[in-house]
Image 1: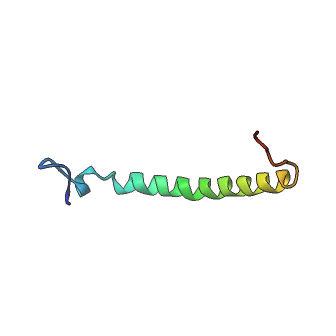
Image 2: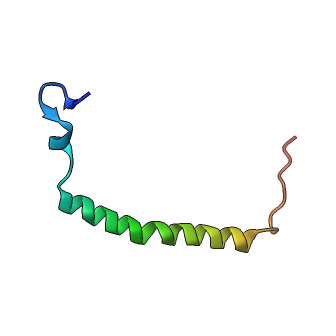
Image 3: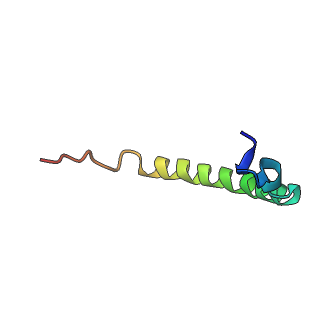
Amino acid sequence: MDAVVIDRLAVRQAAASPEALKFVLIGMCATVPVVVAYTGFSYRVFRGKTIELHYA
């Protein structure tokens, strides 16, 4: 399957420019570790402070 839009646009033509992809990669490399660290911190802070919910 080589076409994104049949008979109009190939996958390589639909892809963003290498410069834009590099910018997104750098942004992700800076953002993802911060999100993971904050999530871990939140779990550590709230560990043991919640109770199991019982419905019915």
